[in-house]
Image (cartoon, rainbow, N blue to C red; front, side):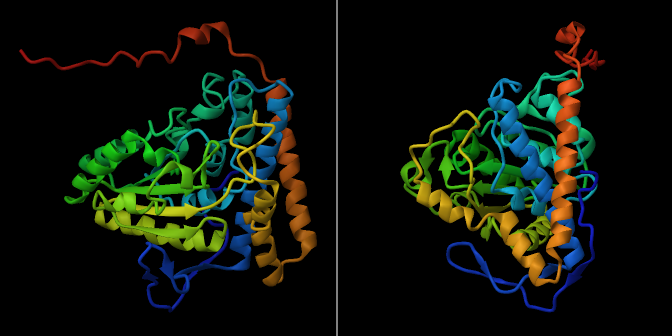
Length: 363
């Protein structure tokens, strides 16, 4: 995916700002709307992500991808919408379900797939695998395998940027399972404190897919209204339908600008559903019923966007053409990965320590 911004024209609506209800959600019409051509561009990105993830799952089950693998199927609208709101100098950081974020921020699909295959041409030379992607050129700072472990890093990064005079923000993605982690509470408290002085431009993006591995939110926390956990640390929040791309885009642009202007943290809970098991190795699920998954598949964000595009006059033939092109790009990425060489043995000792840095000492 070569672009990270919208490919069509954005227009402002004349509606008044939406109102927040008691649960943190916002009501009313979107203040940021996109025309049909822009939505077609987003559709192209989301379809390529889905095909990429399908191919990754096949590679894993064929034994070509080692380690572990978590795909993003069903949540594509969230990263697609929020990453569109990035500006030069902004950064993102997320957990281990990270392929879509890297692709959306400009990473080459072939190099990302090669990383999953553990090849030397991978985005981090085959050393990270699925859960540890990194693409600094595009502002993507990982990919972390420890649940909740990246949250203090993201908050600290945002503080460092503002403290050093950088104007950017940090989009910090986390799952509903990570919000129960002590690292979240410590980092959110610091974000709230530093935010009082405008020194923590962190946009928390809570990707609530309703299950932390195989445990539902209802069985994991006494307070299932997860946004209220942010309130404990003086951080305002709202909820958005994470399956509806247009709703996500509106929330993403407005929230990103709010954080950028104030330097204060803000949170958006994107309510969604992963239509695949937690990980690619989970062949048989026992914690979700087939009926539940079937029902949520009816709200597949790609399917919803297809319906929206047809309403706007986009012909099915054009959508099929986009799907065909996306399949071809993903097939090319798989071919590149399969034909790429293994990492050279000399790489065992590189990137272990930072280059020599001259350190000033008192004297």
